[in-house]
Image 1 (cartoon, one colour):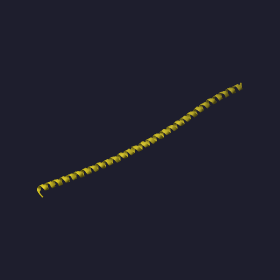
Image 2: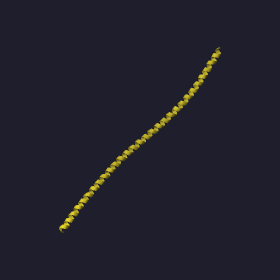
Image 3: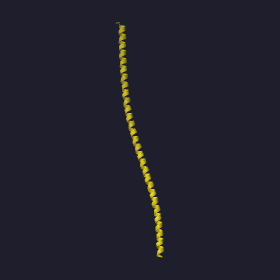
Length: 109
């Protein structure tokens, strides 16, 4: 082999080794990026699930408060109706007592 062939061969081997090292670096960087993306994805999914759970919890709490408010409103309406009936009966009783009082006064005279 001649010196020129050795030079070409050594250059080719050096170029091959350089390209192989570059390829290994690219694969390593790609693996690091994929690993980083996977970690980010897992963190994002966990955060998203936590938010989803909190939203569901708040929706349930809101619905419970709405139901409680509706029940309280029904109780207040029932109490208002009972108070109205009681007031009517008190007025009737007051009129009956007034009539009875007048009847007793007339009987005494």
